[in-house]
Length: 212
Ligand code: TYD
Image (cartoon, rainbow, N blue to C red; front, side, top):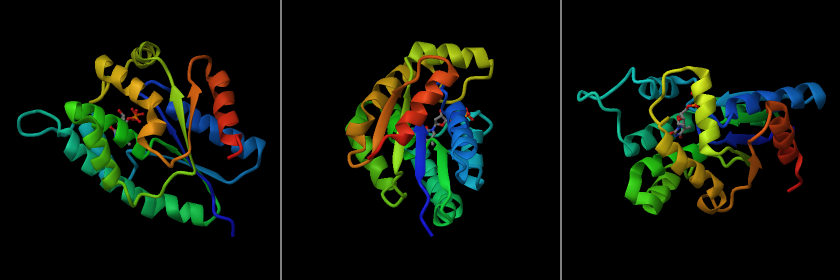
């Protein structure tokens, strides 16, 4: 049987990755009649569920402070290996197209930005941690100016999660624009994330269909 396709959608908080994963899945299922499953990171497995509690402040250290970037990079990497083994690989083996809302590009971006001055050294270490995580066939970055993303986050009216501070999101937006340099060998396409959800969905679909 033909192996499925593993596609990841990435971007800063408020870029609309969750919406676009759902839109692309609907289009591939309904329009093209393909077998598609959506998934996300942090995953819905045990480690991913714990990570979400860290992100929302339900789990903190004894001093009330969230774990640092290196601890988070290790947690995300552990969650990812579990996610690949339990969900992603079995689906791909059955020929299913798997669309993931975030993958290891999020670790490379977020945890290296949070590491501050360590920059490139942190990127190398995070890539090493994820060396045995299956490479996506395609990563689509939804590129949104940080101010637009901040307005979208505000409109949601939810409490800010761990990394949802405007200054950090500005650094992340710059990092994502440069993502192909940080993940050499990966196939990465950056699409303009400004516009209506329909317009952006058309661009994401066009990126998905772009021949290699
Ligand atoms: P997000 O994907 O926005 O989920 P929700 O829809 O529940 O808000 O939140 C996940 C957060 O975790 C987001 O701020 C990005 C961050 N993250 C990392 O820092 N590293 C990672 O490896 C992953 C997968 C996510």
